[in-house]
Structures are given as C-alpha cells and as structure tokens.
Image (cartoon, rainbow, N blue to C red; front, side, top):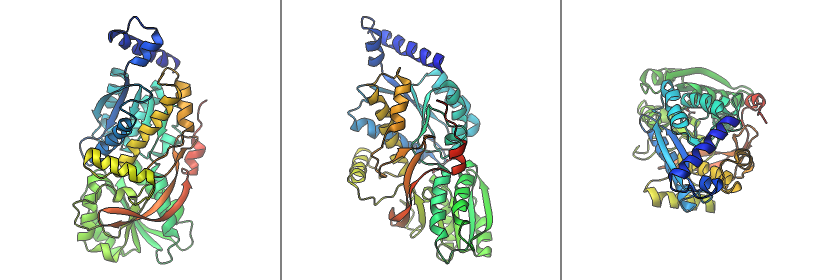
Length: 401
Ligand code: PHB
C-alpha cells in the first residue's frame, strides 16, 4: 500500500508539471492538479437508472460545494459495468490501473462489487460503494480504504422482517427473489428477524436467476400456496416488471407483497398505480419532512428535472463523505491516513437523516417502513432505529490498523 501511495504522488506531481506548474513547489503542484474520480456504474441493463441516479447525486453534492471539493477540481472517468460480474475485473482495472483514479465510486450490483473489492483491497485505492449491499464488503473483506454509503442487503431485509414479525396475521411467508448475493442476503436478513417471533415460518423460498423477469410460473405457484405475504428482492427495471406481473396475476389484493425498499424505489412513475399499498422497508423514504431532505429534493428536481430516489441519495452522500475527508486534509490527497480517519469519523447530514459509519465502514442508520401512495414511498413509521449490520459480518470484520 505504501508503494501505491508513492506512485500516486508521483503521478499527481507529473500531471502538475504537465499543466505548466513546474516552477511551483511540489505540494502546490500536487494540490493544483485535478482529483481523479472513477465512476464504475451500470449505464445499461436493468440497473441503468440506478447508475444514473448515483452519478447525478454525486455531481449534485459537488455542484452544491461550488464545483470543487476542498478547493480541488474533479475529473471523472466513467466505465459502464453492465451489472456483469464476469467483466468486473477488467472494468475496474481500466480505472485503477490504467487511469490511476484517486477515488473509485461503484457500484450497484453485489457480484460486480465483489470483483471490484478484490482489486481495490490489493491496490489500496480509496473505494466508495454507493449501493451494492454485498455482505462481505463490510465483513470479512472490510478494509481501511473501502467505504459504503448505502446499506448492507441484510439491513433492509432485517428491517422488513422486524415489522412482519410483529403482525399477528402474518405467519406463513413465501420469499421470491433474484438468486445472487443481494437476494440471498436480503432474504437472510428477513428470516433473521421474522423467524425470531414464535409461530412464524417460511412456506417456501422461490428463486429466479438475475436479471430474468419471467415470473409467470412462480406467481402461479404462489397463488396455489396462498401464503399470508410474499417477501421479494428485485430492483430497477426488473422490479417494475415484477410489480406489474404480480398485479396482473391478481395477487396484489389477496397476498400482500412486501420487501426491501428497492422493490418500489425509483420505479413507480408510469406504473399506473399497480403497486398502490405495497409496503417496504428502507433507510430512505419520500416524505421525510426534514429541511435537509426538502432542500435536497428541490435541488435535485431543479437540476435534473427528475425526482430523486434512494440511489440519488447514496450518490449525494458519497460526495458528502468524500468531501468530509478532503476538507480535513485541505485537499492534499497524499495524506491518505488522515483523509480516511476523517471519513471514518464523519457524521453525514443526509436527506435520509444523519448517519455515521460502523467500524467496518457500513452506515448505522434508521430504517423506515414505507407504503406506496401514488408515485411515492411514504414513510409510515420507523421500522428499526440506528440499525447496524448483520452481527456475523460485524464480528468477521478485522479492520487492519
Ligand atoms: C445489490 O446487488 O447489492 C443491489 C442491487 C440493487 C439494489 C440493491 C442492492 O437496489
């Protein structure tokens, strides 16, 4: 890691010289060069809208900071990761090895994030995960240079499980999710909370490969089981298709559909109200009546002519977290240990409510119960306050000093 830091300084000084700053002391040259931020996000496929919202959110934080973080301009390099785990290593190397970015922001899909972490742990590149809830990232694979501004998949499943565990009429639940890390970890979180209450059981766990959306046979099976509720993890365009198919199968009224908030976040517009009443749990909701959230929503809508969602918030908060680190070192990225310390201690004044990081670099945050009303995920109550991660992950993170 020391060698990598040294290389990066050499790189910064070299680009300062190239920019005609050769007559200035090295530190001035280093601080005059632009900071390189790599965006590795999905810009095509089922998660494309999520990637765009994350980038928009990050850029909004930069815009609101006057276009610079700690007086430093930012230069972006972008890679479309296509939510394809098989291409992850090649894609992350384009940013880490070829472009030598100072900070890598990415990504959405847990399987792709797994490949990114393998590279950034080794290279020591500062890495902010703005979505992927991949459990090991803040568990056995935790590292000083890896931060997550979003959630662990387990957290959102656990929050919904906590709510359902208290409902006397919900005893028999079917789960149906994409079969990959995110779906599996959400379902684990749900079960960890739900099955703690007496009399609760999972009638059946149903799975479909990512990113398939052929739900018919599975919905027919649910209709025949007649559970008290269905818990599902889907997101992005796939979630939209699922909600439509669930309604079309006539299940919306007879079998309540619940899930982590990804099921309904950023997908309600143009759906003709099919998801009305669907309840989900998440660390964000549309009707949070704080000055910070109101200002954020207004600013985002004005800038992009779009309504923000949880992904936009994560991008925005990633900008705030990085700015907190950069401000502490006055933009001198060669002071990496200090920068990391400041990020670890940051209290982020977020549209979602204030949050801090756990020792494993995962947000500790309130989770809300939300209900779909029109195009919004309206907050109805706090599902779990200041929720930390899966205790097995917390214990598995041995953060090197
Ligand atoms: C994930 O792969 O971890 C993931 C993807 C999309 C979401 C949430 C989690 O909305």
